[in-house]
Length: 451
Image (cartoon, rainbow, N blue to C red; front, side, top):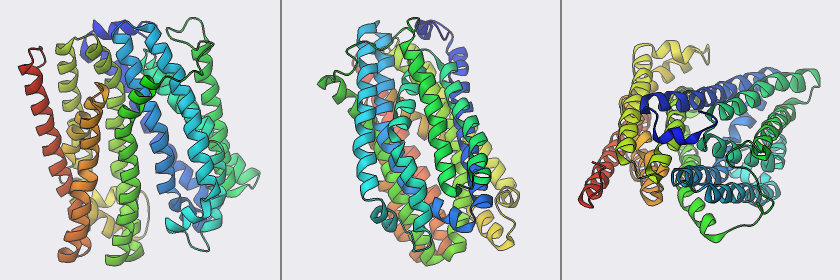
């Protein structure tokens, strides 16, 4: 399969979804585990202020990811659609434009953030004590953004053009190298938090070399041409149009985290913020698994949509929704049945465990629906319906969660903050499902076999 993406239009959907999603899910899960393990290294090797400084960088890291997905998500979607249309030349043009836009974004965003780094970190809540740690970490991360963006952008295109196993190996190699190098740089070389950042950039450089080598290989279905640096307006417009959805989602996530932390500080103090950190890590693990599922769906949906095989698109969507709901339902059951046990993984402080256990049981009340909502939102991205994807990406954060964070705490205190999360999840699901049904009905009226 890794050598013939055209089986996307002929092979059984269930088999394709397994073969494309499992590598992506493994990669996303490994990345999630790495974030936890890396925090442990910093905590033991640098200390409490190092962990606090790292936490300050999370919103800025979200922005780093946002500007990367602005290009990588659009590039991978369009390349798979072009392959479905049997347009190899068009897919090759998308590859070159994706690489150049990744580099431009990296230098523009990374350079601007580097110049105003201290001001940005203070805005995100850095104190006199935590600012040096946050600065030391982000200076190296920002300096490495050209490497990071190239690796992620090209890896997504590689997955979308028929090489899911190679894309999974890129993630695995990068994470394994990071886990090996981080303790060496932190403990043996005594580089502190800069050692963790350096390990991250070096690991991503290794992944970048792996991916670039793939697209230089003459045996690859699409590969770099001598004129890869030539940007085309129509391709740029399409890439940014589709990539705008995950971009805005990450920007909103950045803003929401800042608002949530400030609200938690007001109604629950530092312990509540710590509890939210535990809850966020727990739920993010399941969300990352569903995102891995959608990454596997994307080339299948994109190819068959481009090939006008709408029955196969519909079948992929149905199977994706069922699988996504099963994934988040398992998280719901574990968190409802064993809230203290899962909270105790992160801390041995009884008071913090109690707050986190109470919070997680409320936060996951509508968690099974999140699997469907994520799949539907990414489905519209996969078929190039950028406006619908952007709308669904913003509904949960801005239309539902933000008002809830303003209203519910005034009536219910700390529990109002926890309650705003499942309420937002419910209405976001209803909005996504309604949008999908309206779209399918409209397609049916136009005479296409898509309903």
